[in-house]
Image: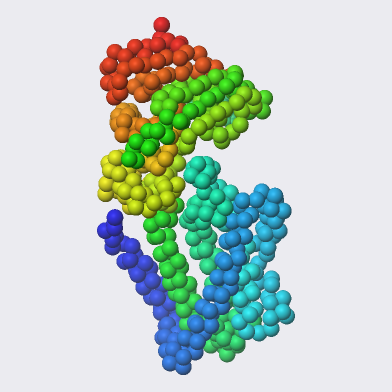
Length: 256
Length: 247
Ligand SMILES: Nc1ncnc2c1ncn2[C@@H]1O[C@H](COP(=O)(O)OP(=O)(O)OP(=O)(O)O)[C@@H](O)[C@H]1O
Ligand SMILES: [Mg+2]
């Protein structure tokens, strides 16, 4: 059922990108701003090559990905079951939802002082901040998904004697899986935003730290290079997560 | 043989409502209802919307308990619900296999599954998901699921009401054909008077809420029955008269 590819789908973004680069070039070479305020594409490319050759960029990418992965996986492993449980217990929902909402709306960056006092410098404060940023939205999204499962599925499950753990794994979980995948994508997006800030204060490497260091050295060319890498990696990983929505047993959730 | 074993099981199946009354809060829905469904019988309930037809099925299946009176049931009961009851995350095969969960022997399960898919004529669609099927195909999968394994009694709540007219006509034939191959006791709810006249051994016309049985009609003609069969037309006249829709 593959649709013929519409040439606009890849040509148009390329046109926009080229236009953007052209404006950037134009502004730089018309000398509207001094070079230390607005680095030129050429300077960014040069610093990109330096960072690659020195191996620093690769190290920073690995460090950031590792921190996001650990914090995010921990949030998913704890948050999704918690959401499942809350979704099935009305009183627990009544008890916990206001608190969960409170923490969801509390910017994860507000935890930075605690992160540093408790975990000092290194990977741990970043793990902690990523976890705090993604755990609450994941719990709430999973819980809301469980609460809106059509009751007909549970009636059918009862007719065919699904109980306990089997009911959970064969009915409840597959029924919410499309929404859980969406929630994972959204909270991954949050964690990728948070990692940059977390590394600016709590780490000595990573993509966020790279930007911070560039600022300290007034090397905006290097900062822009890191920004581009952050944006591209973020998009790339989201594309990977989007592949999950192509699994045959979740397609139904996106096609109505 | 398996089919024989099933026939024997069917003869133990029985559904009985004795002086059953039910209400939701202060709203009385059923009043002193008596009903005995015999093994192998196809009973069709017709009545105005909101009169309590779904409630009767829920009482028969044991999903709800009556406020007063007794319900007795023998045999394995399966329901086709008014809403779409297939699991959208499972394929056609996997959905039908749910009906075979109680079958212990994997070889028999496999064979049954193939038989059922052939029976509903969905060969080639085994690995399709419900959202990739038409409404009529989905209903056939639901039928296969309830017919599968050791079920004795089918409760069907307006199973074809979401289909267009021709789709409904086809599904009636289909149901008759399937019941021919795999006899079951059936309680079938519908708004559709034609459907009642073509399918039923016995039609029960229900009154407005609180529902009582206002008319009981036996139809002896063999199935499948043509729409123009005199027995069908006669039954339709009687039902329409009872509902106050014909002079
Ligand atoms: N869970 C419930 N709580 C309160 N009232 C209910 C409930 N279920 C049904 N009712 C009421 O009971 C009456 C009978 O409902 P029921 O669903 O049995 O009707 P029905 O004959 O199946 O209608 P339809 O043909 O529209 O499906 C209706 O008036 C409805 O409002
Ligand atoms: Mg109903």
